[in-house]
Length: 172
Image (cartoon, rainbow, N blue to C red; front, side, top):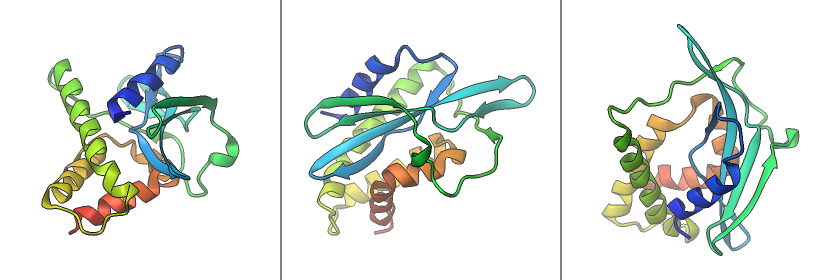
């Protein structure tokens, strides 16, 4: 299952959530021999003249990329909270695109980068090609552009090994 297919499959199971919500970038981890994608859903509130505020995650959706399966949509449990969180309220302004078509193109590019980087992560490759280094650097640029900064501890908790591998690959 590609990253885009998993995102679409998760989307089928989350369409009923309130419209005033946001979703994280995919968080990749290994569970035994399976590649698992998680996306966290949070609520948003826009205050005129101030910006948009986000809550801590309310739901987590997961898919098994190895076997091409949607796994679950669950209410976020208190015990999953990272130990170190920034003080609330959390403000987050999404990246602005000039035209709507650019959103689709950019996220398609991000999902393709996941698909190219995940095999190296799974194998914990140290000897990476120039293309993989380039992909890792580009992924980190996109990540920095789209990540919800207050939610970084969640990204580390649910996808930290993947992010660590991408960061070390980008430095080569």
